[in-house]
Length: 408
Image 1 (cartoon, rainbow, N blue to C red):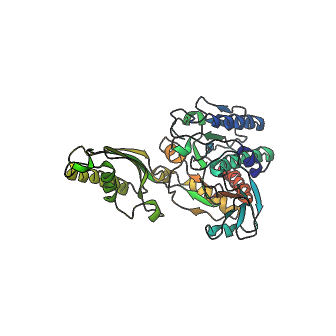
Image 2: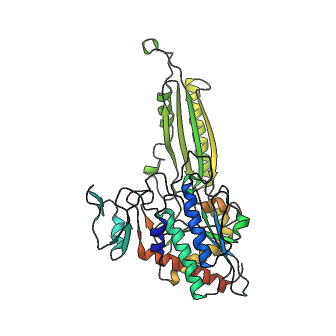
Image 3: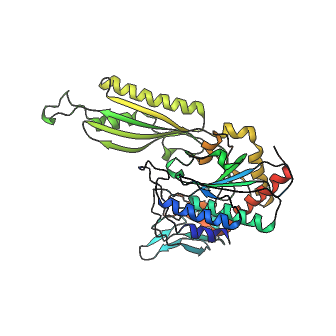
C-alpha cells in the first residue's frame, strides 16, 4: 500500500486532542486510531504491537542481521490540532498544474498561490487537500503513514536491518505527547520523530519553552466615585502587556528569534487573567526573557501596589540541540539518506517543539524528520503524494545505512 493511501485511511479517524481534559489520551477517539494501527502492525509481522493504558502504541521489528547495530526508532503522533475541525474530512487529490486550487465551489474557497507562494513548488505533483472546511491531519497522520509504509517496504524486500522500534503517541498537539512515553518499553537507542514540514526538512534544534499565567487583582467601585480609588484589572493587564518588548511577538519574529505570545486573556475590573508562552532557542536569552517578564510584574506592583500582579512561570521543554550534538551521527545519517535519494537536506530550527525535544532529555536522542506537509493546523493544509512516498524511502535508507555504519 502507498503511503498516501494509508494516510487517507487514517484521516477518516477524528483524533483532535483536548487541552481541557486531564485524562490521557485527552480524547477517547484517539484510542480508535490507536487500536487500528496496532492491528495493522500485527498484520505486518510486528507481533509485539500493543496499545498501553494511556493510548500509546508501541511495536518493534526484530533484527534480521548478525551485524552489531543500534536499535532505531521512529515516532509520530495520532492527535490533530484543536485549532481546526478534523471531522468528516472531504479529501481531494488534485493533479496540480499551477495557480489557485478550488477547494469548495459552493463556499467559494480557494487555496491561493498568492497567499501561499510555495504552492508553485508543487507543480506536476498530486496534492491532497480538504474541501476548505477542515484540516487534513497531515500533522501527523502523514508521519504515521510514512513510518508504516517504510516498515512494509523493509519487510517485503528483506533488506538487512537492526531492531526497528515504532511508537505513535497521543496528545502531542497539546504538549503532552511525551508525558507518559515509556522509553524502556520503546526499546530504541535513538529515534526520529516524523513530524516536520516540506520534504528535506531535518531539525535538531527547537525552542526552549515556558508558559506563564498572570493574575491581575483590581478594585471595583462605582465609576461615579472612582477617582483615585478604582483599579481596573483589565486596563492594568493591557498596561502589563505594553511593558514587554513590542517587536518580540510571533508576528514579528522568525528563524532564531524568540518571542512572548499572549495566547489568552479574560477579565474585568476586579480580576484579569492572561496566559503567555515564552520561547527562545538560546538558553541565556530564554532566561533573560523570563527575567524581563518578571520585571514587568514588579513594575506593575510598584505602580499599583504590592499584590496587584502575580505570575506563575513554568518551563515546558528545552532545546534538544544540547542532547543531540553528542550524537551527531544521527543527524548525519538522515542527511546522507536524503542525499543518496537526490533530496537536498534543509536543516532549520524548529519554531516550536516536538515530542523528540522532551524525549531527548529523557535519554532518547530524537531529531525531527519531514512529512511533506504544508500549512499545518489550517483549513488550507495540503500534502504531496509524491513527497510522502519519497519520505518513506528516506526512512528505509536510514535503516539500511544504520547496518552499514554499524553500532555507535
